[in-house]
Figure 1 (spheres, rainbow, N blue to C red):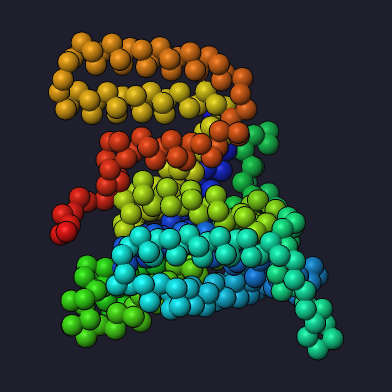
Figure 2: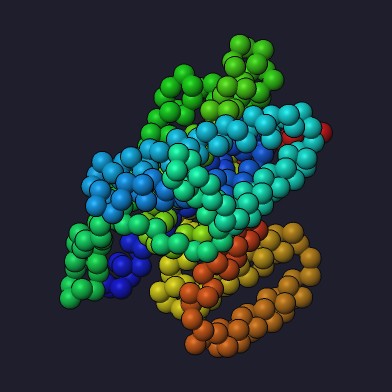
Length: 366
């Protein structure tokens, strides 16, 4: 029982980080119908900005609430500015172009940021040597929150660390502030209007360019906050760290229903819990997911009609293959399957509900 509680806590801690990044994806898609694949790399930039601020403050000034807030504030402000620049000079000129053009541009920006940060570039300003680009080598993120055991259950069976509680509180606060901004303010009303139809919103006097730019800034700031929380948890940082986190957050946004803010949060939490289940209980924890996958496929085929006996035979063969697969992977380390779970979970959900858990099917004029 204690082991299950510990895995639930770890899964929720990971899920809240994915949720902050997924909110940026779903907001940008809501106003522009664009998948900003550079979003995870913006998160990585925020982590390095936080690292630079922590390094500048020095180890003796770290560990306090004010130093942590300063690191968060500077990193989120820097990424908000980066998000504005990306939108202004990369996406805005392509707004009336085919969506594929903007998508390819987003992928190009992602590669430019992630691989550009692998150059090791130093400069000198006022006699002080500065690191302009960090290089490809992994670095250890400083302890901006000194880890202490916040709660212990049993004989050290369940340990809740202070950084987990603080991270969870910060993530919930940011998500709550975003929810209030979008649904309780004039700006949020304007954002939802632009999301519905930006051309009609412009005719009604809404400053569409300003709304879209601020949406990018807001999403980028949330990504920076998520990146700092991820670095506190994972400790090691490197220029490609945003790629996988960004992809998982995108998966979470699609699972919840791309464009739906509560759906992005729920999808991210479910994804974090599924990953932790595989890590904690081994690769055999994939078996229920695969059974669900086969059940969804069989249901879809049955609903569409056809030869029932053939469908039953195929389902039986698939179940037999699944049991054989489970026997083969019974001793495999579950942590090696962690990343595969995210995309497998996405396939299962999209087979059952292509619009996502909270999404709605909308007719589109062509």
